[in-house]
Each structure stands twice: as C-alpha cells, then as structure tokens.
Image (cartoon, rainbow, N blue to C red; front, side, top):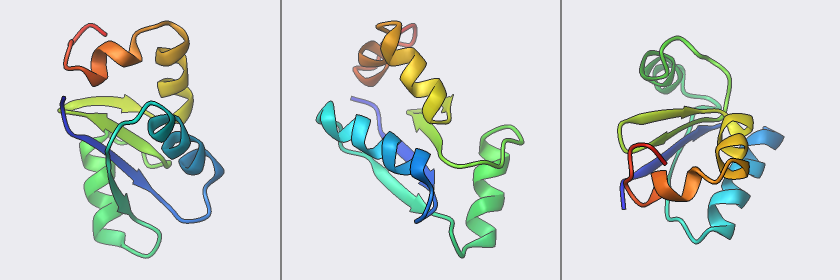
Length: 89
C-alpha cells in the first residue's frame, strides 16, 4: 500500500471530511498540519503544482487533489485501487 499524505489545517471542514473518508476505509495516513507553518504550506503548494488550498492529498507520488477530488475518485470506484497501488485506480 502506498504512503498516503494529507496536508491540512486544524479548522478546515474539508480536511476533516478527507480524514474521515480515509479512516472509514481503514487507511493509515500521515497528516501534515500547515495551519501555522508557512514553510510547510510552501512545500505543499510546490508539491501540489501550485494548488494552495487544503486539504491536498497524495497517494504515493500521485497528487489526488482536495477532498472533492478524492470523493469523486471514490464515487467512480477508483480510489480503492489507488490506495492499493494500482496507478489507474
């Protein structure tokens, strides 16, 4: 299973929703809180190709995007495959 990383802030409802979806699927993930971390936010923005909103979600080296993007992958039946390491979901 590839490493899952979620960049987030403490008060973001979409961040909480992303964490809940991953937890419901039994996925272990690393949280990087950028609430008061300008360097962490710059790293996130660079890694996310300029996207600066939270959450930003990565499965392995694949940038998933935000919560809505991840939820759309799940609704399309592709998220579980990505979480198992299938590049096409």
